[in-house]
Image 1: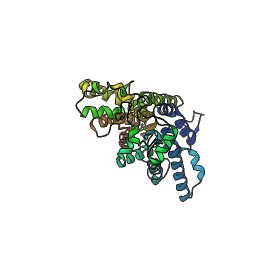
Image 2: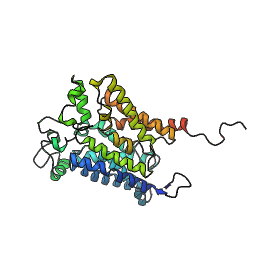
Image 3: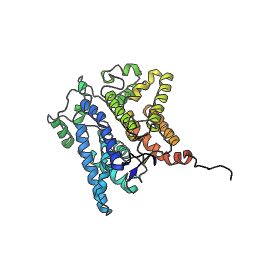
Length: 349
């Protein structure tokens, strides 16, 4: 399969080339996640990739299709996106279940590449979040705040046994240097607001160093850099990421202006959680997103606004996965009402 924007463009890219470019663009964000949250990020990548590729190969064999289709790198990219979204303390079985579900159910049961309705990585993420909430919300604190920063051996042991080499469980490693259990900045802010604290009181904690929280702001900057690379190379168009970030910014700005003591700032929402990752790498999936220029912009705006509403009013601290899946369901309708008018259409004979 070749992808080309017009007959006048000679830089045709195969599906595999596009998938690999997107995977390469995640590297700055992955580097930031590794620096702040440890070796578990790489373990996630390895186990998710092996599980996804094995599942894809098995399905291709069962469908009597060539294993050369693995070369399109779509299964590998799905594994990379899922691995990035999962906590670095995830047990091996969680990684395997998510990867198998993403390929087998969310992709292949719909007919394979180009046929799936939902983003496979986010469908698997939501399945895991609803089914295993404890494991899925057990993020480590940034190295600077960690009481026990895990080594490579600790991370491997934690993945396969549930304990570090020193016998610490994942929830013990999630404690900060002050012995208080840490959570992501979005989760911490949401919990503190429910306890009656103001946003400014909550964000005075060391966890909130930087725009989006210690470590998280750099990870978002890394994914922003990767996203700009994809825009520069023409892999994605501006409408979806612009819509996601614009919708999230405007919604969070209105919320902050109306109730500053009960909301994080717009910049906090843009540089915390999976905002940049979702805007540039998840929502832009060409199979499950809207395709017309106007439809892509509305699609992105809807995801951005839904992300803010679920973060503030819903039960989950981050909401990119839920917002993207809701957007996927609306994409066919958006395309139907926003498709460009054909030449001569609507004119009197």
